[in-house]
Image (cartoon, rainbow, N blue to C red):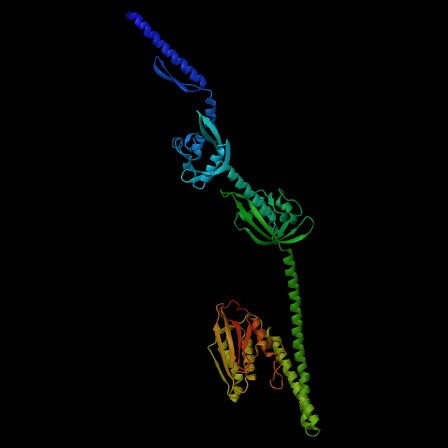
Length: 538
């Protein structure tokens, strides 16, 4: 064969080979098996991209909002789109070729395995959390479908990000909760925008207004006024904007039905994150019944004060006016006794003596009643400081002869300065010491006056004796008016001294009590305000 024939034969063989390659390429293009071809041209090899039958699907998968993942039976990620990679905050090249378990927490492994097992039958779906970035979690809805590729069964997963949906659900739940709270709260609550329109109003607020007030002007729906005049929305807004606020302001309101209410108004501003005033929230507490009760109580207190004043005036007048005829009765009976004693029979002398004694007891009783009437009333005005040591010394001076006659021993601690009227403190010491002398028994009286300081600035004083004592059953009774535990035949008195002491102590916000056991003496304790006491005002 010559050179020419050989060249022709080789040329024909090369053309046949290239034809076969071209036919295979065309068939692959038709089947969508390749995306591009390389062709030798005048300027060298050139790459031409081809759009096969599955090209639109690939574009769709890459551009869809859900994440897509192809997994082999062992959980190896064969493919993922950009959306899934963005969802887990990981580059695509660090997702493909890695196992899906890298993006699952230990808590989610059982749920994912259950989805895989169910998907073996064709399809499964469930919610779980994927790891995203630095241990962050993203909630997703995972849909798994069985996928066969080249005779191998794989899984195709469509992953939907639920973050926004969860956020919307939370917002809806929060809104529902806010509405529920607003509706069920017992207090009338109103939300007003910056234009004065009512955006929210609970059931209690609607009942107060007598109608549905939503989206109405506040000033028209609630006609409220205080001491300065009508409470308009502009006043409210001005108050909350200047941060003066409206806190527990008493107002009045007339409803559309003509009913008057007394309310306690509180207003708080609604600020946006940028400190823009969006409106305010009002709470209107109905205090109508409380105000009516306060007014009724004030009327009763005034009536009681007037009644007490009348009673005190009557007691003063009665005790004062009755003393004169009693004094005359005692004087003329004593004159009768002096002139006719021994000239009549013994029984007549006894009658005259008993009349004289009764007159003197009645006169003493009237004096004590007059002292009780004055105990809580005079002197008026703020009390000056009284030196208890000096007051006690004066009182003991009045008992000087009796102390010497009965060999009494009276001691005292250093006493404080008290914020009380001197006359009242003198009455306290006078009555308590006199009481100890009266009930000291057969042994000479031993008496001690003490004092100790309390944390609230008050002083607790005590008068302790060695007298006959008081049974615990009568510790309260002894402070009653005209209450006596013993007959007048053995112990004189009218049972009014301790009542006077209680009246004086109560005037200064204190209290008085007794600690005693029969046969073991008594300790009378009482509290009075000191110089630094909050109860220093009389």
